[in-house]
Length: 116
Image (cartoon, rainbow, N blue to C red):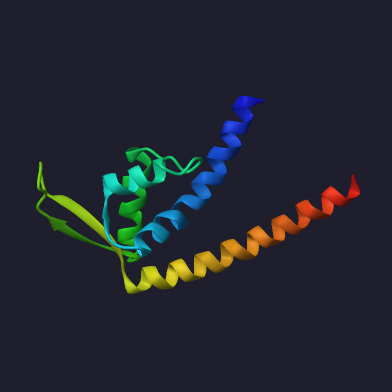
């Protein structure tokens, strides 16, 4: 049962990760490791760099994030990510869709609780 639960949580998280990353970038630009670290601070949203970086690359290709290279106080330059204007619109649309879906699911779950 625990393995099934882990798989289920992983699938939920994968579906929400793009929305969460856009929401983090809406607060200000971040470099990749900062995104991974901020996700790790939120139980259930942890994601490896191997998951986050390909998603960031896809978001850049889609035009929803822009990037800038900056020198780092320690180590090599860092690539910073920020929302583009299209990214702000995408975040708004995804947030609205998420809330609609979550409300619908919560409604169905609440109906089921009354039947017991």
